[in-house]
Image (cartoon, rainbow, N blue to C red; front, side, top):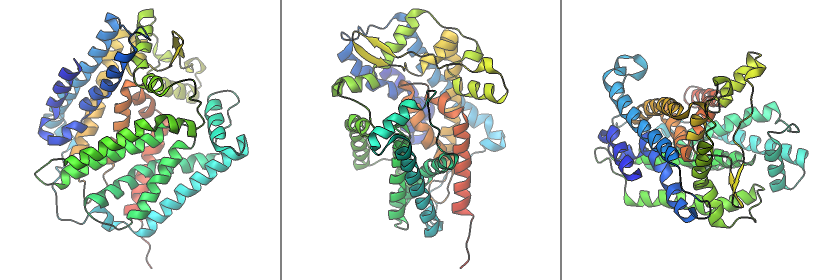
Length: 435
């Protein structure tokens, strides 16, 4: 079934050559494949026999995503093209200088210093608050971040971290652009800046921010390589191998990274640990759907949890502020976590109709982002839609895991991220210092 859906997913973007493998519908379908494969080894351990309604929910969500992507692709070309924002700006591999030729060295140094200051202040905050064992401090901060005894980051540290993490996507693009178009200007500084951004992402105990930059880098690199080849539009085998090796390293080092961030892993062997992250979502979703407890008012929405709670605070509507109602589940002595694929909150809010509605909007939004990504000048311009889609790719990839899309796009943090991108772009492209 997943193979059939994969083939269906390639149809909306068939004219984009190899880039179709970066289209949202392909990423969305493929993201579920590793978990399904891994789940075969846990059918007995977890009694992983999905109910009919669970299968219908997953298949419906995947099919709806593909169909809406296809429809949006058609609308974009023949209807939305009359709207100014959607006007196509077809990319041509021009002879202009690449983007790095226009970036002054001192600007990269400023961003590097900002990354370093952000990292140092974060470490200082952790040491001052939780003690001088870094792994333990990171774990204690993450464990208490949602409790009543949580200690908030100082405002200046929070601001610097937002800019540092957001700038990481732009610097990653500059670095990869330099590699693809063979411009060594600022390359070492950009690499250091990227590594600091990834380190900043890991520093508060979550792996998501750092992994998101890595996935964005993979998406950017593939797109740049394809478009630098003019009409060939191919991705060399050696580049495919590079991507596979990077992904393999991420998976292989997942537990070690967790231990460095203070997470205790001794109670799980490696296979069980990976299974919890890849496949337990299917069991959690099945347990929830089988319980029949779904259909909730918008004020108690899980899908829009972040934005509803934020609006409740801003508009002084305390009845809107609610808990994230996904319990931590166990089955047969196995800890399964508290995530159940992106479809869990959709089904929680509105049953199968909720899955259709929320999936449709997500597919529409992602497809528009993808079309702008395809059209972007990937050599001589710093196009924020290109940056945005590389950011969005991680969100789509982790649809097999949880509701990353509505959690990460519909909240104030993303607004700050976009503002940071705009400011960093203005700084890099417009600010001039006459010597």
